[in-house]
Length: 325
Ligand SMILES: NC(=O)c1ccc[n+]([C@@H]2O[C@H](COP(=O)([O-])OP(=O)(O)OC[C@H]3O[C@@H](n4cnc5c(N)ncnc54)[C@H](OP(=O)(O)O)[C@@H]3O)[C@@H](O)[C@H]2O)c1
Image (cartoon, rainbow, N blue to C red):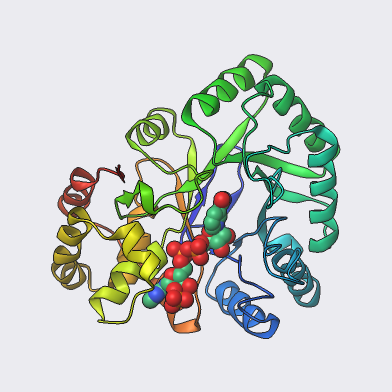
């Protein structure tokens, strides 16, 4: 496993972040423990969760955070693991109504701390934005939590690039560390915009990629395994219909045709290459991926060992449009 600094002041994290959205629900606790044990044994130190996982499943409220909390307690690993979690997610029934009030976010944070059984969050993300709340106010709130020792660093998730830039400028002006990372929808595939079900998600685009490249701000890419799209196609495995809606397009078909050559050149699998591509970003970039088996997790872990030749990396980068309207 290799490690990367998310900002100059840290934290240092494993280049693969384990996504835990299904922990304690789709992936029962015993299997989630098995994944976290294996991930940690192989050098993995970075877990991503959220206050809202998996509130959409009856009885699933905070299942992911609770599962992680139980694991770090049982294994006595709190100091060894970097946890990112998220608050300020809208109520699931009213996704168009932001929840950025200080009392709301504080309650989310306290509930995350309780479920995780920890005194601090290493990296606290705002899961969505409220464009009507000035960035100064939002940064002030986060700084308050940081000074209380409840969070060590903070970041934004699903924010529009202009709001990220405004928050970065304001943080510089006020002498704050500001958002150390941007967690967004990003993978090797070009995404069909109409196929992205949740319209409140923000995806990597040319402008955002250029901003990260220029500023060196770190990115955390979610759905970075493209839900297994290329891997399953390469292996002739059945695909869920919503995957074609999101990833099926000529650009990704052309990429798929190139995988056999890259698999040979890099002595690796499509599943590993897909994640390694994010790790190879021209700025610190960590793929967050989830896995439904230990075999899948092993392919994810192998991504950290891949080193692209400049020609393969350039070939992929040049071909990427990010979004297909
Ligand atoms: N900030 C946000 O708004 C946000 C939003 C979404 C997600 N996230 C974070 O990102 C994490 C990952 O997202 P995600 O699970 O939706 O997307 P993902 O990691 O792209 O997809 C995971 C799925 O990819 C398939 N896969 C992975 N490795 C594979 C392999 N080696 N071979 C074949 N298939 C493989 C598996 O599908 P099968 O199970 O079908 O085999 C697996 O369940 C979440 O757990 C969460 O932490 C954040």
